[in-house]
Amino acid sequence: MTDLELATHAALEAGKLLRKHFGSEAVVDESCQHDIKLALDKESQELITKILLGAREGDALYGEEGIAGNQESSRQWIVDPIDGTVNYYYSIPHFCVSIALRVHGEIVVGVIHDPMMGETWTVEKGAPAHLNGKVIATSKRTVLAESILYVGCGKDDAALRAGMDRFQRASLQARKIRMMGSAALGMAYIACGRFDGYIEARVSLWDIAAGQLLLETAGGNVELTPVNGYDDAYSIVASNGKIPIHEIL
Image (cartoon, rainbow, N blue to C red; front, side, top):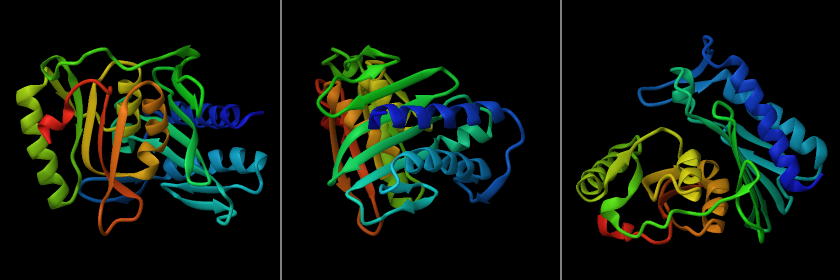
């Protein structure tokens, strides 16, 4: 089984788990004003870890719910077991599993799986990006006024202010703005031409690792700027590679 096949298998199995429990009362492990952690986040990551490290014993795994494996390895799986946990908790069917493989610091495999829509985006370095086995590309739109943009807002004061300022500017210039609660799906939607751009003041590595390779392979651009004071957190500006998204920054 190739690395891409293994990642896809792990994402699909985790997706089955999430779909099985979707709509039932979820156990909350942690809760704050703007976020929720579910017991199912950990269960999903544990399942993914068992599949990935069971097949690649010497690898490392770095996920939203913790680390596992050999952390000295040059091969590191980057996992978000539920990207869109709050959506999941409120029975909103917009969430996904995101798995990437980083080798010697470079993302080489990415999988984003939406179990509710039955959609799986896959990509391997040097090969085309796919959605359910079909080659995909970003939209051909070049005019900001015709675009649909995904805008995220952070949870601290600085990130929230930056996000809301960008939201206002984007609202005046783009055709429509969407805030949907899953960064990975937002990037996947740009990769297959549904959205045209994505901006957020702070996002974690596991949210966008698979999406970055997917989107860049499909013809888009992704710019990441490290956020001071946070480990593996970035501000992100992503687009279909054609619209002048910097006009709203």
